[in-house]
Length: 178
Image (cartoon, one colour):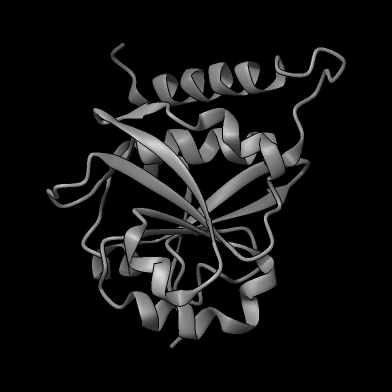
C-alpha cells in the first residue's frame, strides 16, 4: 500500500475489529480495547536498537486498567518477534521490558520510574494527563470520544528509539517541561 498513514489506519481498524469480535454482545470497543490495539500497532512503527531479545516484552506497571483485554495481543508478531505480556510490580523488573505501560496508579512515582529506566531502550506509554510532558514517550488521551496519542520525541531520543515519520504524522508532538 502506497500511503503509510492509510495503512496505519486500516491496520488499527482491523485490530480493533479483531479485539471487539472477542465479545459478540459488545458492539463498540471499550477505551482499553482501543488502547490495546493502538499499543500493538504503535510498536510496529518504533525501531529499537539491535538486541538479542527474541520477544517484545510489554510490561504493565501498577494497577492494570486493561484486564484480560490486553491478552489478545499476547503472541502477536511485531518485527519478527512476538509480544509477551508481563504485569510487573517493581522497578527492578523495568529493564526487562521493551514496552512499558505506566498505569495512572504510578503517577506519583513517575520520576523514580523514569530515573530507574535511565537511557534504557524502553518505549514508555501511559494514559495519564501530562505524562508525555513529564517524560513518557507516548501518552494516550481522549478527545471528542476518540483515543488519540501524543509523542515526546526528546524522551524517545534519550531512550535510543526511532519513531517512524508515518506515526509522527498521526500523533501530537509535545515537549517536556523545562
